[in-house]
Length: 161
Length: 401
Image 1 (tube, rainbow over the protein chains, first blue to last red):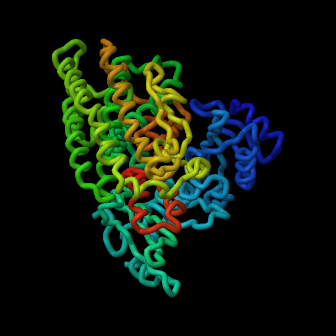
Image 2: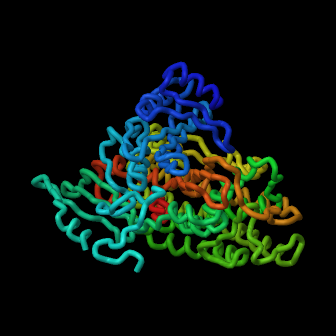
Image 3: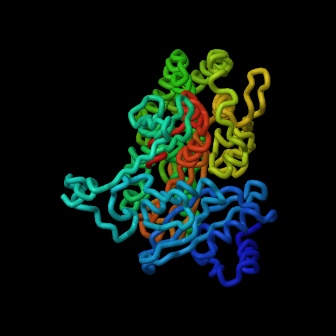
């Protein structure tokens, strides 16, 4: 199935939770989904036989500061059986960056969501073990946010040493 | 000094079972293939839970990339999977090139000669990577000899890489739009002939050795006893955890990006994709450590086949670099994945039309494969953990980025 067809299927199924289909920029077109519906949409994509998205290739956090004060999560999905792929994007405000986890659908999302939490401060609700993964547990702030300022001290050591 | 106080006030709760022991394996441990720390919760010698702690080698690759121009990022990709750095260079360059191709105003195309050189060098790098994996896996499980053999052969490959790009480990050879010309190798020149002759000499030397290694380690009964039937990863589990490459094929899924989503010029070559099958006479079942290991041994043969086809055809004439004034991809985003020795290496690039990416994410195959360790190791012996880590073949530089 082409991404346009998947978009149509999703609009039929989820109505207003599907916010739009971005094609104007170069590269992969992506389907914008409301954050609250993302887990349901993913569940539907994974379990419907005609779609059967059984592999989550990549889950990335993204800072949309250039446009507005929002963070985004991008899901790159692939279906081994039908050999089609789709890109989902969902945006949450920086001040309240909560959205449902998809780690119960694809287990690889577990670590990928932890990484997005670690580096962007996106909170995945329903994730069983949302801890920092790449940075030390006592790290302050979320370094991949565009407005991140590196700390002056870390454990008493001056950072720009 | 505030931070110190915060650390001190942290409360650590430990609720051990009466007979449970918590052991830290790593981060400095030769069998964890780098700086991986495993928090093992043991009941005698049985592993109740093995919790991986990663990040010891985190060098902020993604944050750095946001402040660098695209060509400047290539050396950083070298340091992701430093065992197969050529493949990492290529994966990144492919993603950027894909984005550049979207810009219709520029007629951008990678020259034929560069494509051939890329496939040649990356397949050789795949052999070098699998050799290291084979050698260290043997050593992890108590066989020292294969390690020496593997490093002897890998050395010859490193000398070849040194000849073509001047470096032994971090190559920075594959560039956006072609390959590096630091060491000139014009078509038809003596330098080119010498290089190709040496590649051929290596293949002639190496091909029969794969069978010898299979005799030495693959069918060695001690090795087989340690690996067969251990940590069986079912096909569904492999897919769900995002295990790719040899780990996915080791679970019996016939999938290789080089064949199924051909990029570059892979569709011109004839090669097989090894997929695991049950081997009753050894006791190996699909998805166990032995099968994952065996896929790598078989893949080396296929890489030799591909390189031989290139040698038979000869490198085409022409330039090795596209006519590219500046790397300035159009506004947009791309996710591109390629088949690195350890699985699918993906790069997600968001561009706003400037020479620097807004966001670059490296989807590391080892990162996803390693996340399956916790489930794989439950209920096994401590010694089996070593067998699992070696069989999923991780490189921490890529896991932590």
